[in-house]
Length: 402
Image 1 (cartoon, rainbow, N blue to C red):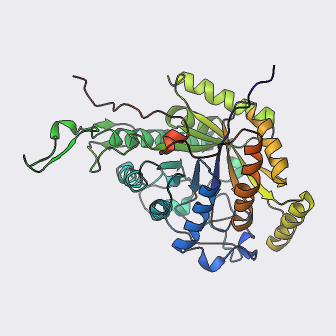
Image 2 (cartoon, rainbow, N blue to C red):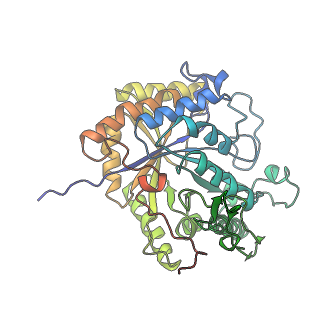
Image 3 (cartoon, rainbow, N blue to C red):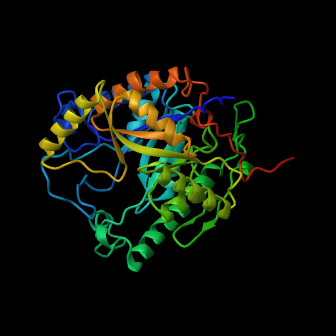
């Protein structure tokens, strides 16, 4: 007896001209348009054409760099970017269904500011907002703010006790950050706004709540200045490579992105996140685990390989990534995604090697192939990002029942 394949969720990660450092030099890349609204609108509307669940938009607190620890001084790669939350807010009114998930850095920024920014995005998009939370230990980024310092931190130091202590502290801070943001979203009850001109009552002040959060990293009284978002809780996501970030996903996120290079690694990552969920008391909650892959797609595998080799030559070195790099055809990628989905992954976030080439290859090549196999939607089935991901709208933690 054959079983019906489980439907896949699919997202794309947008970063400038694409994830390959030489992507901006491709004829389709439009480097002169990278800092224009039209460029980003074009990418996201193309993703929506492919019925994707959401897009994530990269961001940071320092210039892009090929170095793990700080600036690299290179002038042959894209440097400079627009603010991800503002890009999402600009794109929202010209899209209708796709989720918009900007990257935000918890380190150095304030959860109060971020909570109202994402709540605003949720209003502007009519319930399609999310966020991708990340941390930063780079000294040059800390120097932009002048409130804290970090020791020198090299990639090869990652497994040392001192580095692990710092990493744990940063992710614990990020978990508190998300908790404050979530409480602020709930600090207005859904019906706190009365808006009754006849009686002169705009809000019910009893339905605005202090959150009174006090933790190791933040003390926030609340309430927010923005009413509860349309989704109640916009979708929170995070990238995880190891146990400490996996724990953040399990404690605080709705979606986690992992970077397995094979099915065994994928299964291990899912199992660890599920175990951490249970430890955090969230075992009954839905937490999606997406696999991240960088993709170079062409109708012929040899053409995709030749294109990647040409980009590597332009960059003067072979492209590497912490995520698996797939080079081949949309059909071959569909085979791989179905294979990896059997490990417990519920979806995938694809990183286009060249945005102008590989994003359309996803939407016009991969998506139709997955639809033919009955594992991807034929039309958008929900009006909100939570709805697309099968997440219910959560009750307000501060609301009292009659």
